[in-house]
Amino acid sequence: MSDAINDKGMSRRQMMIGTGALAATTALASLGGWAKSAHAQGGPTEKWPWPYVKLDPKETAEICYKEWYRVFCGCAVINSVFSQLREKVGEPYKSFPVDAFVFLEGGQMGWGTICGSPAGANIVANLIIGPRIAGAHEGHQIAADIMDFYSKANMPVFVPASPKIDPATIPQTVSESPLCHISVGRWMKAANKPLGSPERKDRCARVAASTAYRLVELLNDWHDGKYKPTSSFSCSKENGITGQFNCTDCHGDKVPEAPKS
Amino acid sequence: MSDAINDKGMSRRQMMIGTGALAATTALASLGGWAKSAHAQGGPTEKWPWPYVKLDPKETAEICYKEWYRVFCGCAVINSVFSQLREKVGEPYKSFPVDAFVFLEGGQMGWGTICGSPAGANIVANLIIGPRIAGAHEGHQIAADIMDFYSKANMPVFVPASPKIDPATIPQTVSESPLCHISVGRWMKAANKPLGSPERKDRCARVAASTAYRLVELLNDWHDGKYKPTSSFSCSKENGITGQFNCTDCHGDKVPEAPKS
Image 1 (tube, rainbow over the protein chains, first blue to last red):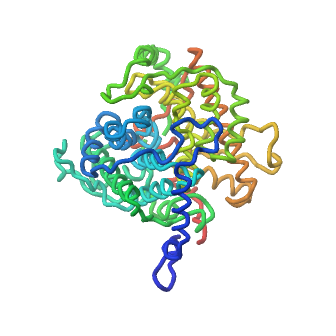
Image 2: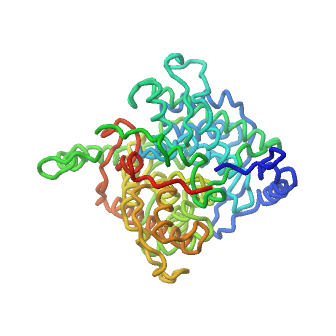
Image 3: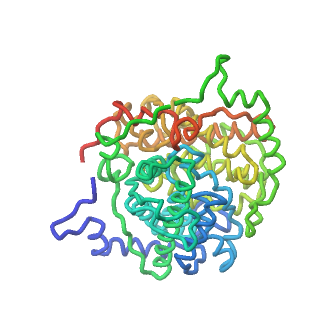
């Protein structure tokens, strides 16, 4: 249920890095990065990577925290990066309709699937770096790193300069999942606060800000040619099905009772 | 755990439709539809709705089926609609970088969260109609309808004119969830086929095509002013947490054992 570790304590992925297999992938990505999409109708924005300048993770997180109260998790993460790149770079960021992604809130319109924070971060990484079918594997890998970080971090990590709610009233929890339902549910149980509480909202604003902070750290590393994948798990390779890293979190005795209607 | 039904067999949402509360929402959406985003840096594509012409659901599904084999579920759904609108309308569809969304595959990079088909459809509906913060509530509602349709339909619904795999070898299953892991898992169990099989791939290509078909039906209704929400469930209102409609599907005795590593 995790990447196999060999007798030197190295995972298969780390070995690939060591032996140059991933270096080859990276070289391919560099070559393919500017290649036009194979799609005949691909527009001018389908050339990757998009121009990127390094951003300040802390400043990005502050923007994200404030934006949460306007556009919620997914859109806040996207706009915390793109609003800065609109100013510092211009196109194609000016032409990207960020606000359309408000629907990522609540695991997409309240359905509790993927939390908007990683969903938004995944969009940003893949828009800037490009899709794996264009040879740009780092966007895919950074998105996987974000899913892993989100699931394992003691959230919220980031504390804004001027929090709307006293941080002492907001406990930190580990979601063990990128799903909104599980992430929010675990926090609500630990905090004993309802979904509509100011504390839960501020927790989610700070989770979005924490995700944006990490995203910019990874993008800055990629920009400097220093990016290395921080996650290596593949559920399909390990278990023959898409999924997350901890099967027994849902398949087992740990699942809490459903709320009473 | 479902929208409360009154003694006339009407749900709260249907009553709202009847009493005009939703009509007011729709009026607001019409007024707000062309309003510019409140965001000061909003670009030219942040004016909604985007120009839309009615598309043929069957033709869209055929494009989606073929595109799956190039860009996989989420991106195939987006491009099945946008490749046509690029030709029939032009901008802003030409400037939208569709191929960046390949990462929606496998519930986002294989993590098994939201299936790329509804994730892609939700993006399309909200890009065309606009976000609820701009007053355009139908994008949000059509996306919720897509989640509901995806979860309850006997998938795959759509049969392409020239299927790559004999449809007789592809059973239909009801996912009861928009999550890739559950949708694919239920189908794999019914079909007794592995993730890497040509049958599973063609099933997913046809699921994407089925979702694109339904999406265009809903968008065409919206274009004609005939759209009415087909789903009304709100987990946060019913259960105080984000989530799907069937709590006991995961919280209960029905969860199968995890695969053996």
